Length: 253
Image (cartoon, rainbow, N blue to C red; front, side, top):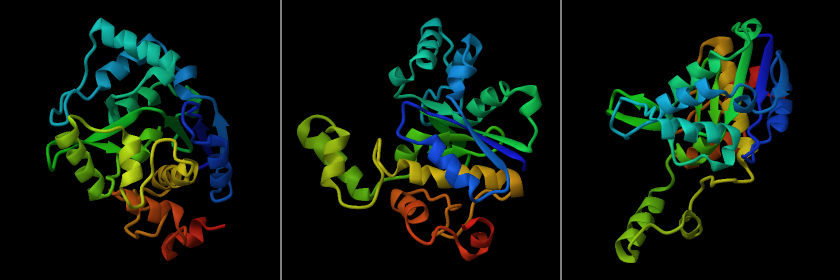
């Protein structure tokens, strides 16, 4: 691979420039950073693509609501991303929509594009008939969801028990911050100061996949591991060693 381009997500705490510097020290490709992908490539057609990619129900494979009001919402979200939220999008559909907007001269698999997104994306699970939130969707372009880092990997079981208890006795779910302060365990929260460090590994996974064809690593102590629970994210992305023995020789600096 010759080039990697990251795109900033300014409404998140993820520092694309710091991620690019870290990646640049570990790969042979030239790494660069550009401003927010959705700002430079956003138009009414992209807004409609996001509307079509909306997940309507956790258990419904069909997606999309292109009613005028929804498309207008997506247009506003492209212009003012801080107003977006509360929606899950089909990650593969988003990937296709972004890939269609890459410059013709930059669509080669030798040039990986990695938009950091402030949207939550998911993929459909044929094995259990439901949508699953994801941190990244590998391929060209590779989608990396910053809010997905907090929402996709499951938090400790006690978190959900406390959530149910509050709802039962308090008449509703408490603010997320209350639960996060009450529950012990290792997990990342929205705007976590460790976000940039954790996202580095998910961007490297995108590079590794396009460069080698290998999706993830089975070793829990490797940056290329893709855990389904938050404690696993902490282990893989925020603890030493950075890489398993097999991948250390390739990426450790």
